[in-house]
Image (cartoon, rainbow, N blue to C red; front, side):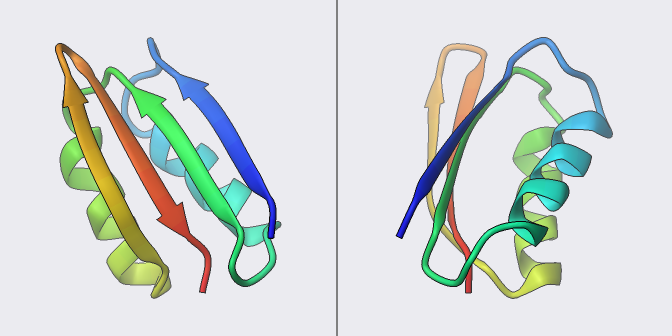
Length: 74
């Protein structure tokens, strides 16, 4: 299992979701995508993406204006 980390701070909607979708499409089952976002809409968009793809949102962490997501590919 591999882990990819993306720093998506400064990117605005819809770029964080598009980058996450592209990254997840190229990952193997069990791999983890960790990403940091500053776009406030990412807190809504990323969970919706995970629901759509069937992957698992393992963690959402808020630290100031940065939201970090940890997604496991199904």
